[in-house]
Every structure is written in structure tokens, then in C-alpha cells.
Image: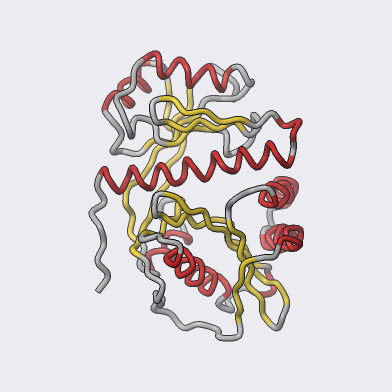
Length: 275
């Protein structure tokens, strides 16, 4: 039987800080890989604010109101950070945030635009997921000279979304300068799937899942999931985390493998600025 910690404020703070740190590290790596990009991040009242370009999904905050009461001055500073860079203002907000966050969001003209579920499960170095596995699938960390291989495999996995190709190729270059960990799954010696891992606060944040169309339903993502969680446990992590759209196939798959919904977050957008 899995012993789950309570989905309380303490856990929520760990999860939110982990994702905030992962995104801040992405921005730092973006600056290294693309010096002219002007990527930056800042911290205000425990809230991590990231700018990765006006249209980047990374351009937003994490942890709003999670670590202390917010004031109008705090919100002024956060909004100015984005507005000075020509970006819309987005906050990804946990329902366990201090009430001051929700009061200020309403007072200042924000509207909710999106929801996401933060899921978690305890992990250990001997973790075994309860599902049939393909023993022919091999998972490993990529070598330093395989960043482009990882990126192209990920791009092929998202080939049905051609609008994302350029962004994903850029992500591959950013990962070359990042502290995040990139994993690849191989079948018969050929790369077929990718996964990424960020570690902070004793939490393993999973992302970067992609499988090439011709190799789907062969156990690659199961192998990547299990191996990343095991690896993270050897690095001192006790909790695995992922973020999904509510009710999505990704959420169902996560719950099949022992993940539980810790809470549902709301993304808020300031009205009247860049869209």
C-alpha cells in the first residue's frame, strides 16, 4: 500500500516551488542558449515570475500567494515586470494560496482562463509500476552530444502539431544549457520517445513526454515514467509530480500509475493589456 502525504499547504508549497524553480532554470538556460532573447526571471514575495518572450507558455508566474500575504505593491511589481517587456500578465494560482491573492486578482481585473491539475505520488528507488512492460524498451539519460537527437525525437513525437515544431527545436537547444535531465527511450537501438525531469525540494517534476507515431503503444512512456521516478528517488526525491489538463488522457494515465490530484490550479490573466 502506498503511503501518500496529505495534499495540504506544506505539500502544495513544495510542488509549486519545484515548478517555479524548474521554469526559472529554463529561463536562465534560454538566456545562455539565446543571449539576445532577453529572457529573465524575478522573485516577488515568494512568487517566481518568468519572461521567456511575449508568446512563450513559460511567461507567467508560479507560487502567487503561497509563501506570504500579498499586497498591492507586490502585484504592482509583478505586473510591471511583464508589462515592461510587452507581455501579457498571467498567474498560475494554487487554490491553497493566501486569500489576499484572490482578493487582489478580483480587484485588479483579472479573469480565469485555464485550469490544470497538479498530481503527485510517493516514490522510491525500487518503485515498480503496476502495468505490463516491454522489456525490449531501454531508457537512459542522453549524452552531452545527443541534445539534437533528443530534440528531433521529441519534435517527431509532436509531428501532428506542426505549429509547435520551431518551439520544440528551440527547447532542445535550451536543454543543452539547462540543469534539467533529458531521458530517451530506445527500441532495437533506435530512439522512439523522450522524457524530461527537474528536481527540487525533494520533488521530481516530470515533463517532455513524446513518442514518435510509429512506436506508440509499445510501452515507451511507461518505461520512461518508471525509470525517471526511480532515478529521482536515488537523488533524494520522495515525491513525483506532473501537471495535466483536467480530465485529459494524461491525467487518466497518471492516475493509473498511482498519481493523485493534489489540487486544481487556475490561470488568471490581467485584462486590458497585451493578449
